[in-house]
Image (cartoon, rainbow, N blue to C red; front, side, top):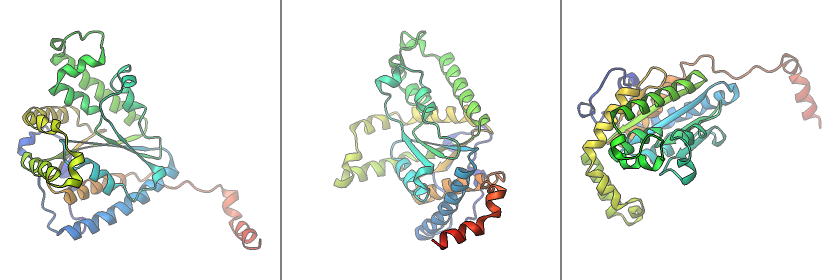
Length: 293
């Protein structure tokens, strides 16, 4: 195997139909090989992140979306475990709090953006506002918007405006030094069923299960249609979407890590800053002074 995949094949550059994209991908390697090569890529990512931290001019925003059980939590755990804790911040966005609902829907995401030099990982993202709320438009009423008084006001013009706002938000942060990756963990309905059953059959996994998972599963086709539309409307050069085959977790993790690595190594300007010339000229003296203490 040895990192032999072209990561561009997962990047969305033309309109897609999710139903025509496979939820599996053959890396032609066994699980141990995939996990070993993932470790190698993650170690390289950690080195890149250290350089970024010292360089201090770029931030990286990694957005992870997917249906329930798609593997978002374990993806974050395995791909970013080698990064220095000071250089990566993970935000898991749940139902908006009362404070968050008093602001516009992008506010809580904007204040969570990574600082220059850091990786920020959004576990569920601002796209929930054109996914869950589009499947359940009644949720929009909780935002207390001036021009929305009933569900009938949440029409196509509303969604057009919201997609425009999201595109503008991402263009703004990209123009100001944030490198954006958006990953859709593309899971099959059959594999979701298997993973939900495992949660129910294994007592130590029961805590992950909610009866709401079954209810949301009944809306599978609605969610797929909303994901399809969101990806097509918002995959841009400065903020691309990648569809990640997610039926096999080790494969999905490797592909995500490889995309991050292969993209970031192209930023040749990300280097450690040079020492001040005077300090550099006197390094031997500093070493001698410390050794002679």
